[in-house]
Length: 138
Ligand SMILES: [Ca+2]
View 1 (cartoon, rainbow, N blue to C red):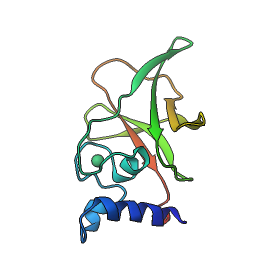
View 2 (cartoon, protein in one colour):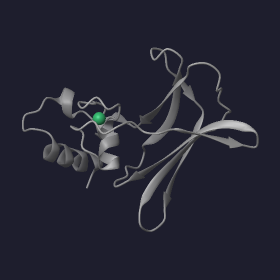
View 3 (cartoon, rainbow, N blue to C red):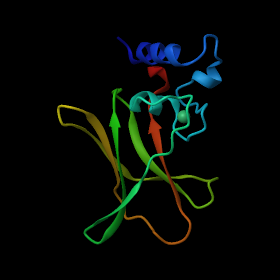
View 4 (cartoon, rainbow, N blue to C red):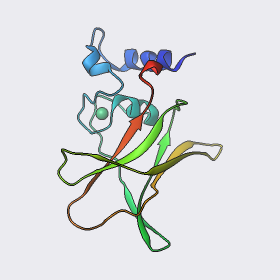
């Protein structure tokens, strides 16, 4: 079954019949919790209930400061990529070289995302996770 079918089935179960594409689109965030619908789909969370943002941790690797997060998934879509972005003003966002990997311990699948370059801890900085995927998957 194509991923688009799986996502569309999920969307049909969770959104009201006839809901506009601006609500059901994979990149939409109708509950305003900063998690896009496609991320809610992967995490198994309700796209209509704001349930908090994702914690990004600061870790030290060989004296360098990096960002790290781990997300437990209930679904996976080949071709999706994760990347950190950073901003000092919440308006202009810049990509951060990041590496992600899928981990499967036999009980759950998770994705681990880590910045590759050292990140600054000076001043106000915001970080977000961007999901990249081919639009024709949906
Ligand atoms: Ca959301």
